[in-house]
Image (cartoon, rainbow, N blue to C red; front, top):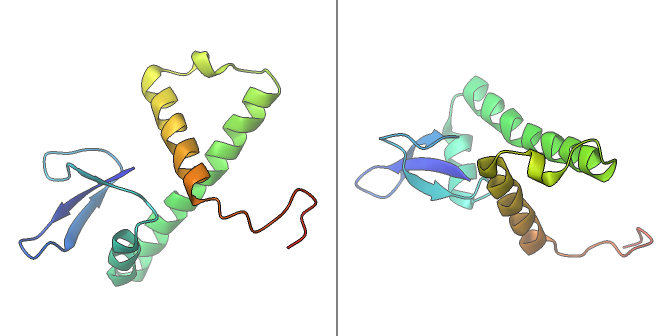
Length: 106
């Protein structure tokens, strides 16, 4: 989840990875509003934020490998991290459109 601040017209004017006094409304990272906001940002800023969002997927995949290999257990994670992992898994399952079958054919 990301946190945003809107102007009086309802447009996103600020985006944060953590809740702040200014950014306290939650929004999904892949929301069309977030993507539109990022597209309007100066290139270096938008690229950095987009990179952060993509890197989240890498961290999720690493965590999955560590869990699958038994190197760590889910309960080793702090409660806040457990909640975020479960939230991401839920978002992923809801956005899975099933384009590939089990044998990777379309």
